[in-house]
Amino acid sequence: MGTAVKKTISLPPDLARDAEALARAEGKTLSAVIQDALRLAGIERRLQELRDLQGYWSRQARAKGILSEQDLERYLRQ
Image (cartoon, rainbow, N blue to C red):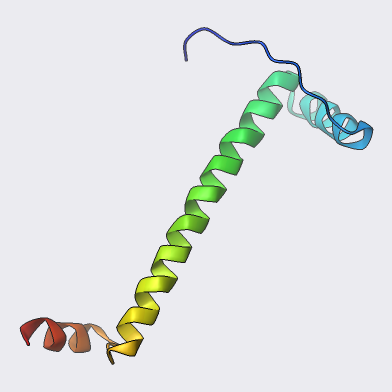
C-alpha cells in the first residue's frame, strides 16, 4: 500500500458517530472504515460510468434497429 498520508477531515456529528460505531462493530480503525468507504465510492462511480456508457450504446443500437445478436450480425455484414 505504501506510506500512509495523514489528513484531517471534518464530519458532521451524526456521520462521525455512525463511522465510529461501524469501526467498533467491524473491529476496524476509523481510518480503515473511511478508506473502505472511499474505495466503495470509487467503485460505484466507475459502475455508474459503465451503466451510462451501456445506456448510450444501447440507445444508439436501438436507433439503428439492432435489438438482438442476430440484428447486430446482420448490421455488421452490411
